[in-house]
Length: 399
Image (tube, rainbow, N blue to C red):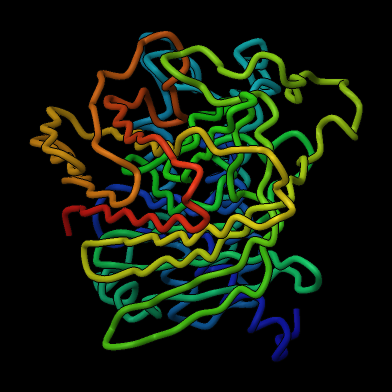
């Protein structure tokens, strides 16, 4: 296949977007597919199939990542006791359409993907070849951050990737969409496998400020984003956007394994009308959001503005939730620290003090990589005089 500027641009972005981890064994997760295992394998096959588009360095990186994916398949996804791929047991969870009734098909399809990828690399002359000795160094030379726009118009769509040492964070500005807009893995939040993840088919509202209204509805800035901007300064990277309206969360928010606001339409039921499954726009509150990425820290700032379009409706309280794999939390006012885990702590302003809870073992805290361990909740009442609300949170992690 002939290479041209368009091919190279597309390839460079795709290699970067797929989130190849650093030299350690923890694969980075820039994929938002809830199946986990399948999202990694689609990149595995893409790399093998499109090696003709790559430079020599890119080819070495792609091959190294492919080997690590195969190792991860054997060491993590294959369960010796089950004698099967495991995407469902021991705290692991997928989206509903890929539940355990598909166990035979998943084993067959994933095995074939591995075989196909291997055969591609053999044809390229990589049979029994080891990962290049400077694999980690090649990764470190990749850009530390990148914003890739998907669409621009009345509302923007795009993806931010930030590399910090061994960490690769993905932040999607995708405006949700039919049925999935109110699910944790699709929220505009920085995620990374085994560090911060969302729960498939649930909305805990991970790291997004929640405005609880007096009429029982829960509003959040998850759709209707525009004007995405970026800034680089002193090694830090900042990205932000504007929300001209908030979104009514279709099923309410998961609290303690159950859901609030039962009076709302259940938008998650397969076969429900397209209209019911779309995001519900709520006028009267705007939000300016920014994320600042620095070494070992991520900071989010929200500036909510209440306008006359809200009418007589009133905000009852504001709430913020962190779900984490980290353990042994200690709380002090608005701050939590963890004794064990990659995520070492979080501080939040403008949302009250926090309380920490052990995550329930009832399926409501499962992720593709296993069950989350800790839930931390900040909450405070909102007065009728508050027409502007500013909140910030800062997470800290090991680097």
